[in-house]
Length: 415
Image (cartoon, rainbow, N blue to C red; front, side):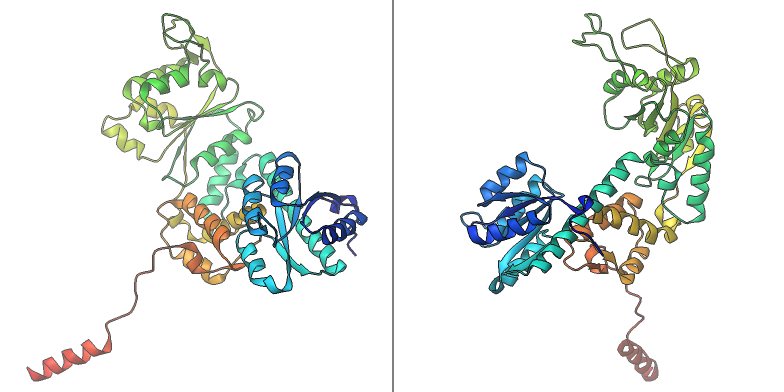
């Protein structure tokens, strides 16, 4: 039997009700069970409380002025997105209560409520808060090791095995794969299971800045008149000293910068921009690209010697269309993550899974994650259906209709 008064089941609850009598009844009931209860007589006062206090659950009456319960719900979730909310409403306003759940409320109760029913719903809401907090804490604390490479296909099992093996060495790794396949996740998994895991993992996106800016970011610069710099910059190589530097989209670097990268990788030394003195660095390099890097070498857009330097251990992340059996596992994984953050847990229908497996996913795993997150946020029902995923329609598989066939037969007969 659940003990609602045990410390692990208690929470901080905000009760919002302009009517003193019903507010007092609710507050006294909850305090008698050991909960910490805050009070507010208006939506404005409730928002002020949320801005300065940690709250697990908010109970609000729908019928209030000047700010009604629906407006308060919307504003409260903007202030505290993970807040659990359920509304209290008169029996004649059930439609408004249902609308509140579409807007993100966890539940509703009609007034006057029964004590047992109220306490049961409060316990459910607080349990939801605890599950969300536990899921978020686990996600933040656990390194993205090979187990984070979600999938049961042979290709993904082989990739996870390679990640585990290469992580034990200090070899340079080149990760290749289409956009959205999870190349950064692979790089983080290698670092998280290496001997350098306690040291920094530093990311350099080679495609997001200009050549000049990227050179400054990678190598740093001293402060002084010679460089025109108002302040010194260490550079990402120095930031990653002892750890791992991830060169994302490395094929986007300009030829002159490729030469500097090659010299640094060969010598293990960096020279800040405008400075002649070299500094030793101990950095493991993991590079990634969505391009065919060997084609880039053949067409003289990427240095062959730098390619050989980076391609010590090649890892290929397969596109999602090559591992369709991973789609149900990935979709469920992303749905559980969405459920941990959302007010109402959702589940996947078999029809939805079948529809997802029939889609090509040009955006790969990133596209699937975004589709699942959007469906979980916007779907009104607890079970997600194919139409919740906003996918393009499947091509028609219908053959020619009977009427044209008859027409053709008549034509042949007439001839």
